[in-house]
Image 1: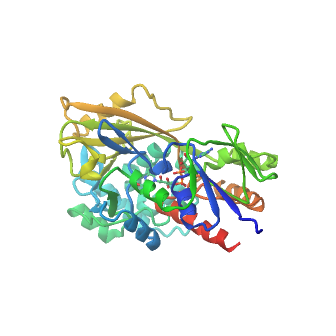
Image 2 (image 1 turned 90 degrees about the vertical axis):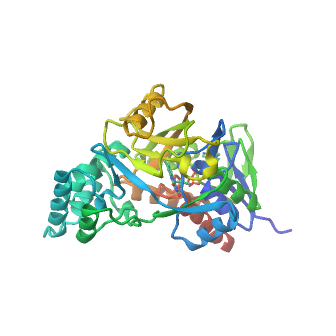
Image 3 (image 1 turned 120 degrees about the horizontal axis):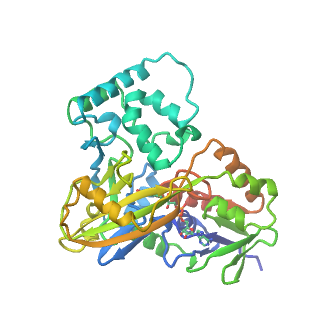
Length: 432
Ligand SMILES: Cc1cc2nc3c(=O)[nH]c(=O)nc-3n(C[C@H](O)[C@H](O)[C@H](O)COP(=O)(O)OP(=O)(O)OC[C@H]3O[C@@H](n4cnc5c(N)ncnc54)[C@H](O)[C@@H]3O)c2cc1C
């Protein structure tokens, strides 16, 4: 009798569900949570639906768009982005670099002069880090009024310690003519990859994860945390001491945790993994008994006077995410060992910030203040990242262990990239 190959996947987030959707071998997913979705999941508090930090759907990958639209038929809608920045006590449209209209005139002038200097600079040197990339791309005005303060606040580190190649086409780079249009009057609304985005009508982003899980033929074992990987015996061991034997193992959990769990990994690789850096996010979810507070979808806050760097207007993601007559927001606050956040005061400080930004009134009836902690939220694209990840990846691959997804590949993936990466891996495994 021929042996049926067995694929074990650790994690039922977008990447794990992508693998499960494409694989032909027998497949079991081990997931530590009680629900699928990973960071794509949602929760409901007193009738308010909140994502694990606001999640919108947009993609350039056609097969992923087709998949999600087919899955969500009748339960999905698209909206044109209303994304804004609050700085200098003013709301200006995102992206800052193409929409300085409404900001104080000396700020607009500095941004324009800086962009002219950067555009006509004859310095041929390529930028070698994120900070240099900002100055060279946008000039000193846009850098000092938005790009540097916002990114320092978000990444909680010196930007010269970060690589810049991850930015690729994530950030719009308007030319001088677009800058001038957006300085003299309302600029273009459609810049960047997420100018139009999709969202489920009901249940938050969780519904997409639920439907992906239902569609796959894999067995998903929830409430199952993998604690040990034995590449020699080709086994994984769970917290409750169950042993699963595999032919191929697919890991979607964070790379540094993978290394910690792996038996017999060479010391130098273990040492290398210590240089992987990540960022955590605390989400403060707020539910208010007042409807249609703003038409905006999300707002960036570059200034240190605000604890949060971004507010996702969850109440505008879909009409059904709040109880009748109510509205909701999620404020995102990054933290790491150098930038701590006081979890006990974060709720009140967030409410105060929302009032100062004119989004709430002092006497608004607050229904919900709820916290979601995401200990591993953003990978930090340090200069060492590429070589560390490729050394680890190579070693694991030699042991029939495949790393896939945002945190296992240590890549700045969105949901669509993670699903697609899982699906692509499944296609490769189907060929072996
Ligand atoms: C603040 C924030 C906002 C974002 N907004 C967007 C957005 O608007 N649009 C978008 O497309 N993307 C967004 N993303 C990115 C998106 O969330 C990720 O790209 C995507 O979730 C990555 O999927 P993944 O499967 O690789 O990882 P994950 O979603 O992290 O899934 C990994 C899974 O593995 C499980 N797991 C981990 N360790 C173990 C273990 N030891 N045993 C068993 N199971 C384990 C976890 O519980 C989880 O379910 C955002 C991310 C963040 C942090």
